[in-house]
Image (tube, rainbow, N blue to C red; front, side, top):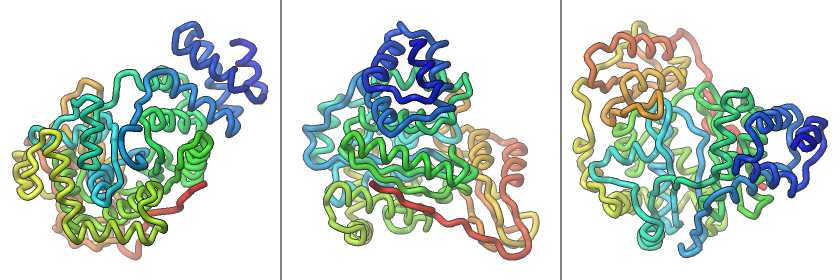
Length: 432
């Protein structure tokens, strides 16, 4: 291992066998943390070639279980978002893409941070559960074209171990390590093709656009190198996506969007990502055709019917789709009034997310309890005019003292006089 650390430190390329030796030794404990820390730091400074990145990814894939989805008919397309605030895309995309006949076999986690993960959000629907075995999962996807299962315990254990180490050795922000971490999980989960939604801006992990492009390209190259058709969309997260931040509130927003009545930016991004999913699944031969198919299932109501079928199959009360008041409701609904007239120039996604967490919508630690009913619904987006006294946001809370939450929101929603440049929703797309 010392020789391999030195080889990488000096900027030389490692062979497939050398990378496999490192990953398997680290997984079984024969290579200690301190040597892996030194190796990670060497990667941080020297980077990795395309081949090394692909080899590292596949070594992590083979460090634990992999999921075999070959019993599911058709090309299985997975979507991964690098996260953000109010990122409701999976809740819309899964039923939307399934409604045109593309199988969506989704493995999701619980969330640490501003709001819950996809599973927490879905559990806002009374009775819904993801504790299904692999056979049920496959059967549901074959029958309904969509199912969501919780992450299996032994998927990419090398990545879990390495991630924990990177976190405490200042090596998180390394593009080869981030890219192989994300792609190893997606490949182990059995997808044939992968669409990546790489966020950039204040509420994103990659705040800088050039860095987001580098990460997107690295992940697309890994996927295509190991035989998974992969492409990426680079989208804006300088302000929250959609209006709702909070678990049950985001379910309601997803329902609205599948009816064609949701926020413009959320619907547009879902149509963009969904079109690539349909294209990679070979259900359409052009992006325009794919988008037309998705718009049609929203218009015809097929998308909303698919959502009901999906919720019901996994024990959920599908009547919430027509009666959203059956979702968990907060005791207090309070408006955040604008202090002055003007134009909204900034909505700092991170800080709005923190305000939602103060209400109990997210987890500060792994053991925190989530309150599924609470959260924030924005009333304005960047570039919108606002009058003094008009609502900037609606706070849904089960606590009476909202002083800190209001302070955080006032600090993150800036109102100015004059023209404001609205950020684009999609900056770029990267394919092979």
